[in-house]
Length: 254
Image (cartoon, rainbow, N blue to C red; front, side, top):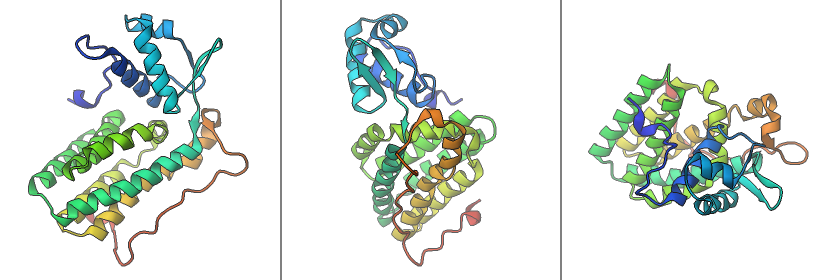
């Protein structure tokens, strides 16, 4: 039912191999299939996916640039820990960009887009209780659809390349997801866009994106070995103030 959001960890020989290897390994790191500290090699990956070492080497270089791998000559390649500061940076960046995206949408609400977003929220409700991976994928599709609807699909692809550390935390938190609250937040975002309220949509998307960090201290405390933490106390996220005078009552959208 949710095949479109499940990981595709096989190669299509008609498409560029290096980019596919990069995508597959990136997904495996984000989903924890390749956990922090896990050692991998070009030879191992090339054998696993029945390809040569060159496209694997290219994928490793790109993953290292994204901070997911450390390529150590003569010592092997290892999956990096989740960088705490990078999680906060990614959330800050996403919030700034996506707040502008929903303001664009609220300035000229599109009936077809509103219907598509509501359909995605309905699918999320179907997956809410039994399929946390499916729900997480649908959450991602919802946010990407907002960007595409605003004509900012290219911006989303840039964000996607920078938010890997934040996504790793999201997958660690799958069993902690306050699913009904997240669905309510999505409904609030759609309602504010449909109502043409730029400030309301701005506040609603910021509330939603801050949700992922709500349980971050507990996640770090439960699995500290997975994280690269700053020296001393971990910094609190720097939050932009919500627009004043805009009440966002999530419960009213349940």
